Amino acid sequence: MANTPQARKRIRRNEKRAEINGNRLSRIRTFVKKVEAALDGGDKAAASEALAAAQPELARGVARGVLHANTASRKLSRLTKRVAAL
Image 1 (cartoon, rainbow, N blue to C red):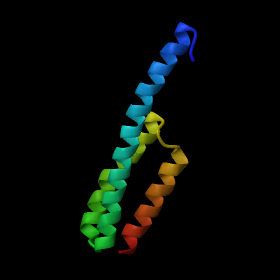
Image 2 (cartoon, rainbow, N blue to C red):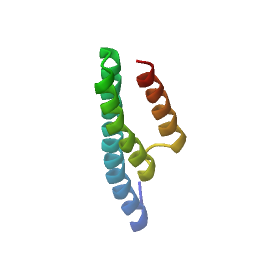
Image 3 (tube, one colour):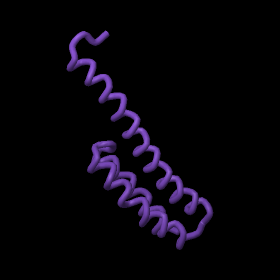
């Protein structure tokens, strides 16, 4: 149990940040799933459009500290390669 005011505040802050970061990560995953769904459907135009929407979301996740830069880069690279292969 937190005994100092600073520790209590950190607990409150950490809970708020965890919720916000969870929402951000969920949003990023949703955009990535839209690209994957378009890829599974074989629709190159829709996949390209979804990829263009997912790219700034991944970059925003990196900027906000939700994703590691290399993770976002890897995901974007793999999705781009799959879209190009259609």
